Image: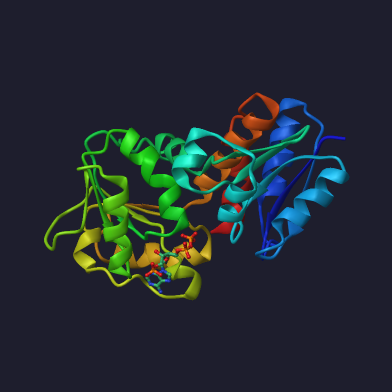
Length: 265
Ligand code: ATR
């Protein structure tokens, strides 16, 4: 039995089972992919019983990514750098941890022909989601990344820890090619309190998708954003990379994009 699952809490609305089922159909790989409601603090027990059922791998989402990092007995360099794990593979005594979020974001930006080399970025947020993408963005050759966070002390910690002279605090009056919202603000129906001018002419990307991201992106657009994108494409691309980790082949994402786009706007 080719059994996989996504663990998280809440998990009812996760699109991952449909995405992986579609990838499996596309490539002729028979698999079962389920949702498992796993509250914070109970990942180890959930993994153990899933392995007893024959589970071969699992995606891990909010609020379990740092728990998954700690649980993994081996970690890829990109998971190590992100400090978070979203893809677990079980074999023999090993729980292998990987992180496909950064790769998913870069693949989605490439799909939308957004050029990163030389770009000036504003990254909003300094939590787990932001941490997962900052390394791959730096590797993609951006000119600089200004990191904004509601709690400014967290930004100082980041700058001290990451030690890259392309990272800085935002300077009033700076303009940006790309603005990425990696805060959880829209989940609480708030807008991150950044000056409206930062959106002017920028490509604005929200890691969230659907109506949750819609409010923030509509605000950015009203403030003169050049283009807006939500995180549905990133969700699909991180799933494609996780699929490749498990099955050795990366699916084409065009069909799934078309399938889900009509349902989540
Ligand atoms: P995640 O894994 O989703 O990033 P997290 O690690 O709890 O979750 O981080 C949440 C991020 O959203 C943080 O950057 C947080 O800012 P603080 O460090 O100040 O807490 C940000 N955030 C949450 N609610 C917000 C709001 N209403 N306005 C602005 N930022 C918010």
